[in-house]
Image 1 (cartoon, rainbow, N blue to C red):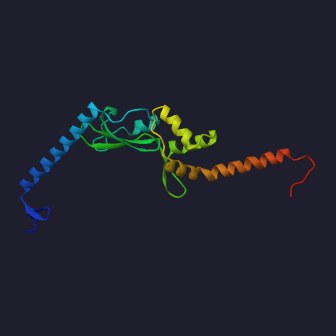
Image 2 (spheres, rainbow, N blue to C red):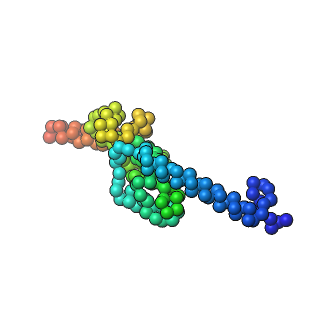
Image 3 (cartoon, one colour):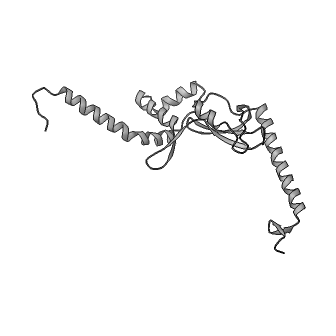
Length: 185
């Protein structure tokens, strides 16, 4: 009895199990083919994206068979601010691969953050437009916007650095404004 195969806690013959596995694989391939056809006729991914070309080029490879992926086979997309994860189906093996459009970094408290989100929040703070102004600009460009909560999360990442730079700058300016003969306490 120890040599018998079990499937869902029931004994099953080898040839029956093989037939079931083949049919499951065929059904899965059929669902993926339907996704490709549906995405080709009405691709729900539109507009512009900010993309790091070298990162995208490195990631456009099926993680199962190694074949190059085509952006024509995008079936879905998830966003985290300006960073996108493209869900692309391989035309060779029908495997779904998730492809990032940008680089990430790890923060001091071990959170994974997108480089583009950090940079765009820094730019918005530096230029004085804030989250609302940034989203108005992104909307005009047909680029997905960044939520206020995500903006605040990235703002808290860069705030200590900005405060340190501002402190150093004000100390330097105060030093330059002091009369030549006066002493600091």
